[in-house]
Length: 361
Image (cartoon, rainbow, N blue to C red; front, side, top):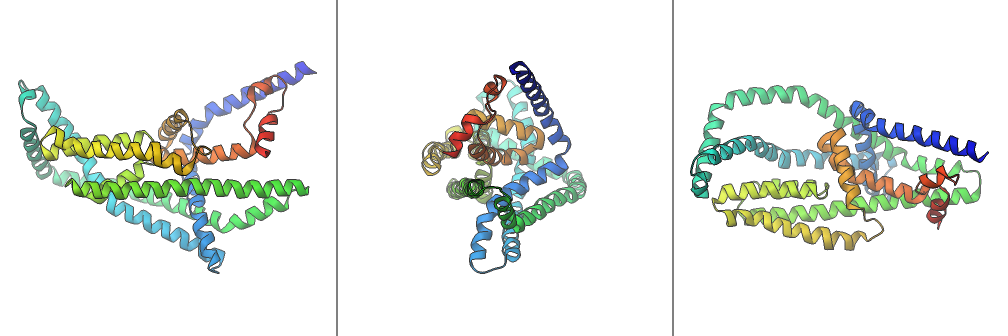
């Protein structure tokens, strides 16, 4: 009997491992479907408190959910025009900057050149490149936008539509989840679990959004004080990339360093914006965020890096932005369902035995 139970446990575990190995390829192949759904789940959890607050103003659930989605769509549109457009211009210049600096370093005696000379030469290179290839770049840009825009807009609209339907049906879902339980104890546990999961996830994501927004405001002010072009773009990038722990701030620090050095023409003065940002990031990541969120919702940095790498591999930049919220949702769910006892399960113990008891406590 024990041998048969262990054999069945091993078979179930092997099948689970096979499904886990196939999961990234399934998610990547079905990106057109799974990515909007995952984004819709995160958007719904973020907007649920907004819809609840609007309902307290005696607005119908349908109207409150629609207004919440409309506010989110408006902020997204504003971000695209005020942040992403200048950022795209910056990223388009990076290959020219890389080629110019690489070519200069390959010349004899290039290390002895002052940075001001290199900066002036780079400005001329950017200007001549823009004048020479403006027609080709414009036509190719319009072709790319013509092909990519309908698909991207379709994905965004699908995510917003799913989010709206989830917001509208959230109350009925909670009620049915509680009503369909057999015993009073199960009903009470289901109600507490749903309330706690919703509250914890909304609290975490809402707090992180507020912190990242404050970081963006400080970076915008700092970029303006340092005389960088498009301060709003730098602040917006700081707020958005802060959703990707470790990797996002590092990317922004590198961009600030390159832009500052080339604008100032001096190494120390040019690196001041990047140094100031790294100082702000150190304070935010090690003091402010842990103090506000507490230890209960802290996540292992190794898990964060793995999640960012995994979701950016299958879904690109959007996946990287969704990685931490999805990990938080999954972790809070496990806190209430219990962590699987895989080793004990192979030895004949319940799969969720001890962890379920801890979760109930």
